[in-house]
Image (cartoon, rainbow, N blue to C red; front, side):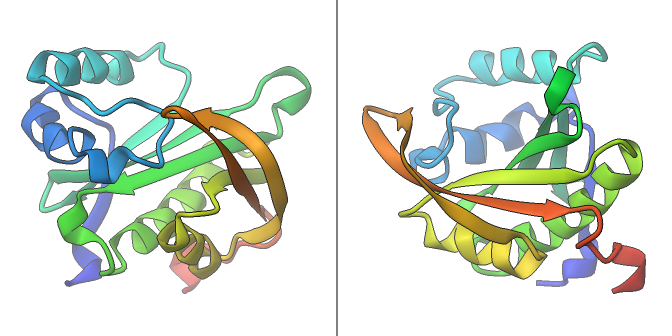
Length: 177
């Protein structure tokens, strides 16, 4: 895999078929808080939502040759939490273990700290059973801060999660890597 081909861009409505490949796969979505998409109509509804310019999340498509193979999102806080954002990411199963999400996360962290200069902290909640995501967080430079016991009710079960964070002062921009 040539990781230099990985880019991030806003989603487009024309990503609907590519989105169904990963967001319609139970294996990909098993650790995500959103449900697995079951139809092209659901995927199009989702894309209309995230393509809306008034949508308050930072949501990007992970692309290779402009083809959507995954996503990265960040939910910026508001009020007293405006200094932080919660991140999430995923990619089609065929790209697992190749460094794709790690590379995309590094790009995203750099971009988020540029796009939102008031952000001091990015954080992610990782299911204790999702060892692959834990490795990604470590490689990107996030620090494991602790275990949150029985933190989320996800897909029929109450689960334990690790909380990870990276501070703006921790991160070396992509341009300096």
